[in-house]
Length: 174
Image 1 (cartoon, rainbow, N blue to C red):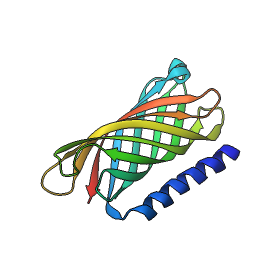
Image 2: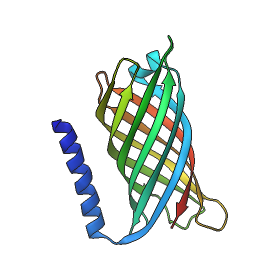
Image 3: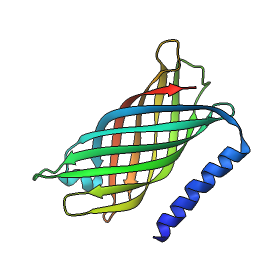
Image 4: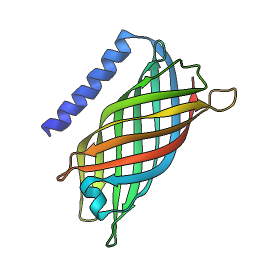
């Protein structure tokens, strides 16, 4: 409970400080789908699965730094039958490398979140962290962008549940 409160406080502080120090540059929202790769102990009993998600990024002045919130749902199959379901969300800081007007723009991200994990024997909701990156590329002359991304994610279950989603998506907005 103490970790949950600290995580909520940290996410809230990051959002308030970032929003109060700089003005908005734009909001982008989007959807994604991809493969969910179990890592570590999770990889010893589950096969790769799938993940779907959506989110929004609020780009700050200059367009290099953004605050992102996203939600996702994924599932993997146990080697011996059954499945693991993972649903959750994460608040992250995003740093875009290069100008926002570039036809292809790499980015890095890191943040904190909460995930509910159900391996078939009951579920638990725990704090998580994630770090990753990807590339955004323009699609046409409008505001639509294609995104290929990944993020190492660790959920503080016992033992820790770690996975790597590899996704493709579309974003819209400014």
